[in-house]
Image (cartoon, rainbow, N blue to C red):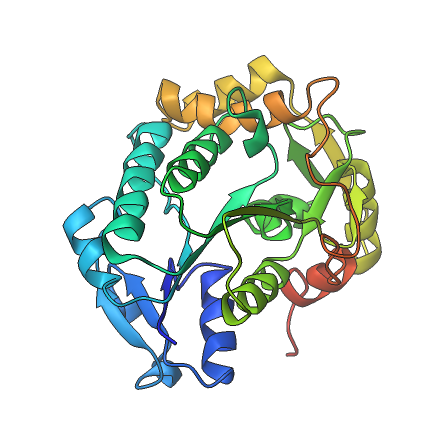
Length: 292
């Protein structure tokens, strides 16, 4: 079986690639720079160079593919993130149509069901719709809040605070990227489904940022306090970092849209959507110093 994995050096793709290798496959790693692949995977994966906004390159890279794992890559700095995702959406839909790819798994997000008003997630909604329009078998993995987002705040957490634009009492389904990869691997290696499916990946529990700070306090051995960044202040901070207006809307719009009154994920937490890795276990592995 020929499986193509996009963003194979990312937090999910890198783990998924290894799971497929361990399953005895020789997956295709679609990426811009093959040098970024770990040396120990040499000969075990097939690196193919392609820009995910280049339709001809992606169609060529996915020729003969039985399965495709698609992740919209980050937009280049200074560009419109939603326009970038729209370009990626058109490309993946064309590749699926032209190559007759048997099944596609899209790394999407909770909130994509809103279709509008959720910042960067609106780009995933557009990608879902583009793939749905192909009529081919497609599975949208609606992922929760990635625990790995905490890595961007590692220095701040070490100093005792965790700042966020999310309301501190708003519960979110926190998920480890490795668990997303495990779900993706099972679906890619399993039997083909028909039509369009949606599957949530919610992690083991819904946590507020106050809850998360308490977990980090216990893991790290020093107090960590969650700090709320009001909407205007958060947007001003992003502008101060040099972000353009579309970039600010994409980043800030996620918390603004998904914390609005009345929003609940389309998929409820159940045995299918719940995955095992706790925030405590993830933080102990990724946010604590290794052995001396």
